[in-house]
Image (cartoon, rainbow, N blue to C red; front, side, top):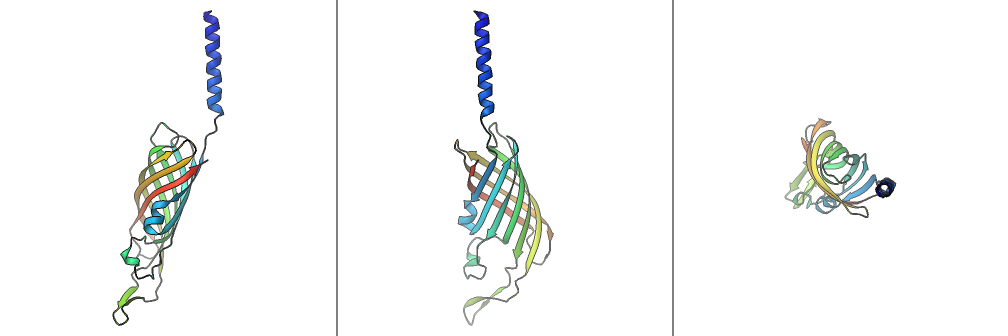
Length: 190
């Protein structure tokens, strides 16, 4: 009788392990940063590939949609970056698969425009642009911290914040020294 129970338990455990291995792991994510769209009027999309349960790498693309010629431009929050491409690596600290608190190291290529080329003309009561639209191509490195939560059906929500330093600036006259990395993103894991 003991041998029969041992054999049944052994077969049950083998079947259980086989079922666990048959479940495919979802390793791809695509996300849209709702925070940047709402607050900064910047389109920010990202793709992330999950290497294993504790690490991933990805890239995000930010395009600033604000019009610097608009009179209300300086009254609203804005990014100095008109464009940013940000590859990143994340390390997760949770027992779940690529879920929970994470640390991120990132690099960033960004293009900044000279926004200090406007002046106020009292005769017309308007802001005017002096016509010099200079840009600066910059390379930055930085770190972020955040958290990610994934539903059973693959819906992803994450939030993060961090800062990077421009280590190369093609035009140091107006390029910023620090660049932000902020977000509250929604997406899908497949």
